[in-house]
Image (tube, rainbow, N blue to C red; front, side):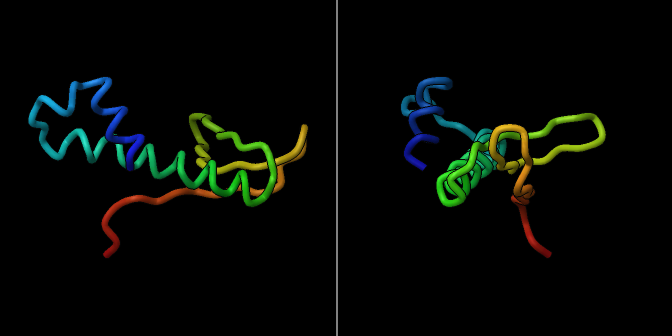
Length: 80
C-alpha cells in the first residue's frame, strides 16, 4: 500500500489534491496483481510474466527458460 501512495503522489500529486474513489478503484487491482505476481515468483523461485492476447489474458504465469510451469488469474472485486 505504501508504493500505491507514492505512485499516486508522484503521478497525481495525491498528497495535495482531494481525489474521488475512482482513482483508487482504478489502481488497486493493478497493484494487487503485481503484489501476487512478485510474491509467487519468489515462493516458486521462477520467472514471472503475463500473457496478453485478444482471446486470452493470464495475470500470473511462472516458468523457467522456455517452459511454462504455473498459471493463475487474480480476481479483484465484490464477491456475491
